[in-house]
Image 1 (cartoon, rainbow, N blue to C red):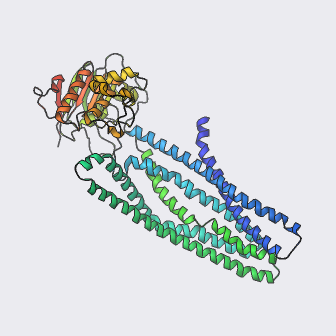
Image 2: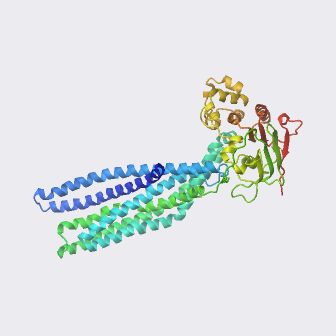
Image 3: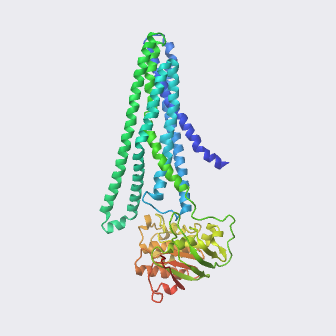
Length: 550
């Protein structure tokens, strides 16, 4: 029941926002019409009591316009922010399920969807649908009033509003279609380039490549500006058409009203009402050309969000999950192949990959880039489906829930993120309930004991954004400490020596393999070493070299 209620709340708030917006616009129209009548009637010098209703109405409509406009802004932004939060949460949860199958791309990738496109979905309602719906209700009331006073003036106002509130936005949207598609692509590219630049800023500065990178960002920014300029030009065209329709409607109302007064079909006091009412009515449609463009932009944003939400699961969960086997896990791999979603061919395509890993066995998997080493790691961690057989103590991995598999098989990747928080919290991600003693023990087993003892704030030391306050080796050891703290019996290490110099890599890997002596370890490494001469491989029981296939 609560979930259903929560689902309806944004729609209920959006409905209230439409009513409040329509009420504010209607108050503006009524204020103009009442004021026009009041001024015209007052010119006849009637007893003041004859004017009291109009005077009070003017005050009421003036106050109501401000109050309802404030209420509309409050309710609509609350609804839009709730919708934005819900959309971002849905996208983030979906990306979490898909990781690491979703890869960054040149159009902004997952980052662009979460930051930019989710916001566009909220703008669709806040700056697109809501103004149009409110204007339609308020303008309908203005046409009814004008028609009641003088049918011909009402018909003219209806035509004018259709031109200014429907034809002009459609023309503006049609002209802006290509511009908005280019703008969306340009914004996504700028987002991606900015994120890449910030992420690699130290390396860009160190190698003197920052000016070239800033030039690339400048080009991307100018592309966004050009696309925005084209969009603004078409919006101006729509606004100009609306202004012309406004003037034409006022002049037509005057041209029809004067003869009606002469013929006795219209009271002279009401002439000002039918002439000035269109001015207030067109205020409601003045921004609809821009609203139409925002709807166009939001449609592309919604398409990208829907594309992420509709991506197929990289892993199929079992319909009838098998229980997790008891005892020390015995891992077997027989003829496994795997393919990433959307890939044209298998990433892991070894003709026959057969591995027998009893508890406590250490193996190293080597091979050049592209032969499927990281793909094998993703298969074992159940981030990717596979063909062939991978069993855990006799039970197929595909028959086990993915979360249960990851309680037994832990993966430490080469790009494990280090967050801008304390050392303890970075390690405690692997086991949120772990004590400080457990965290410190994991850090010492990862070879960070001497460094930890020198820190004035010990576990409360902040490591900086992306681990900027620590060295590359320390950052990698923090990630490895997480894997040790998770206390999984099977540990898959996907190139933990990446980005490290050889001396540091040897020390890190040696310390780690010693710390994990009682566990099954699959070390995936780019090292090109001879088993007998490499100090790391002295702690390895078997070395497997994957070969590329034609």
